[in-house]
Amino acid sequence: MKESFSQRIRSGRAAIGTLITTDSAQVVEIMLACGYDWLFIDMEHATLSVADVQNLVQVAGGRCHTIVRVPENADVWIKRVLDTGCDGIMVPQVTSAADARRAVRAAKYPPLGERSVGLARAQGYGLSFTESVRTANAMTSVIVQVEHMKAVDGIEGILAVKGVDGVFIGPYDLSGSMNCLGEVQSDAVRGAITRVRAACRKADMPVGLFVLDAGAAKAQLDAGDTFIAVGIDLTTLATAARAALAKVRS
Ligand code: 3PY
Ligand code: MG
Image (spheres, helix red, strand yellow):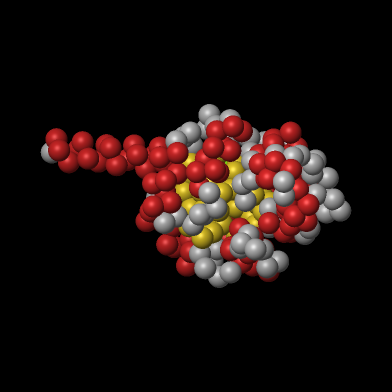
């Protein structure tokens, strides 16, 4: 059986990903050619539909892990996204143990949760139903986003929820909840991140983080993050395009 994303982020080998926000097979192929370990496909802040997500997951074709951020913590999104055959979900704005339980309930089949049963791509359109249902809970990762001070304050409760496979810190929303929007390198935000990281380490929970700037990513890995997402497809394009033009014009 292939390695699950959960196993990967527990393996000790850093998993480096990037955000995919465009409905572009070419972008996925480029990121695969670059060697990214996982794709963070974003439905929360992008225009991607469930059909778009399925196309992107098909293009990835199991060559790297695909984790899809659902628009919100709701079973109507979670079951449809998981039925595309992606490797797991990223759930935004998990601020309490109850939120984490809601995500697990929608993402894991009984007895661990109450995931609704489909006969879609993830189940081989019914052809591999028995096998996929048997392995789904182990193979499907539930990553909860800690990105609000309420979540930082309640981190131990969130970490105690069975079925949570990893914690992913969202520094930007976290900074907003601390009244210092965008100041992700401020002492206050860094302090909150350190608290979350320490709690995760104590609970033996993989922890990851989003960084816009690749220069900052190495420090996060050194601090103990086991998975990170560096940059967003369109910001990577925007930054490179502006830099190229500036170079030519200078
Ligand atoms: C945030 O920084 O708020 C994020 O959600 C990054 O993924
Ligand atoms: Mg966020």
